[in-house]
Image 1 (cartoon, rainbow, N blue to C red):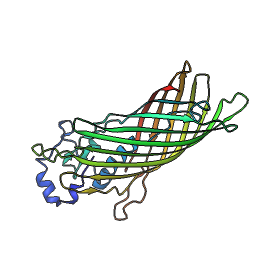
Image 2: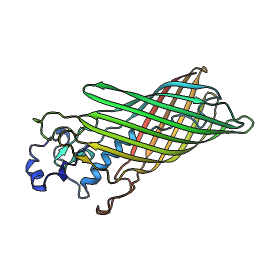
Image 3: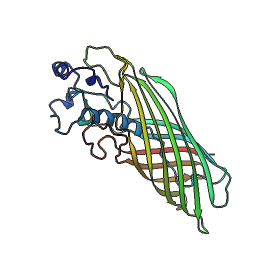
Image 4: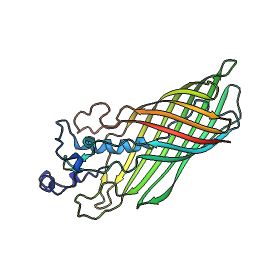
Amino acid sequence: MSTLRAAMMGLGLACASSALAQVDANCAGIAQPENYEEQVQQDFLQNYTALGFTMSALHAPVPHEAGRGSIGLDLAVLPPLGCKRRFVLDWTKTEETNKLPVIPKPRLTFAFPALGPVRLYAGMAYLPPVTVDNNRVTLISGEFGAGFVFGSSEKFQLGARFHATSAKAVADIATAFRISDPAVLDYFQANTFGLDASVGYALGTVTPWASVGVTDVSTLFVVGDDGVIANNLHPYAGPVASVGVDGLVKDRFRWGAEFYAAPGGNSRPDPEASNVAFGRAGHLYTARFRVAVEL
């Protein structure tokens, strides 16, 4: 995550301080690309993290039999970023963006009584604000959806779902500009919401499924050591898609796995900024997993 300190200091100061700025040894010597834009890099880092917190389905269009539910744990992988996405401040500093490789989300889902072929359901996930190594992340998500079953065997499923998430982090996100500087806690908040449509086909104890939708992201990042608010001028607002498998073992243990993709998109772009190619200001490709006990 980045800080927009570059907007607070002149280009000459940034260049004069570059020798003292923290650069990961693994990233030293990598040349700055010709199409590098500081604002796009800043916005990408915020959008990338926010997309990692989204509440994707991780279940079939009909997640449970009517009147049943589950309680368990989701594991959302946040893939590490390479050096070219970690440089900031006009390529003078790298950020430590890979502190949270997996986001755990305790999750509860419940299916309401059937209304003919319609299966209404709701769910929520909550990660309490537990502090670990001076870092604190909290998250709350919710979903509401409707699944439809077709055919005499009721194997074919269609679904629609709304989801929303609010996540907050208090940690040394930006990291100190110089190694000798003290660590100061920063504040990051991400809010996301979206709509999905899905299709699935029940094959006994497993149901493969796929979904497409749109997701909107908004973020707030406050740098602790100077109070700068890093504005996201290209918040993600674009397509998302998932493919996965939902399974039930011995009518008791629920599991799921999915590949989740947010290929790119931006909204409300800064009219003064140069052209931003599709997907440059935010995208994510990742895997997510679920284990739960069926109720």
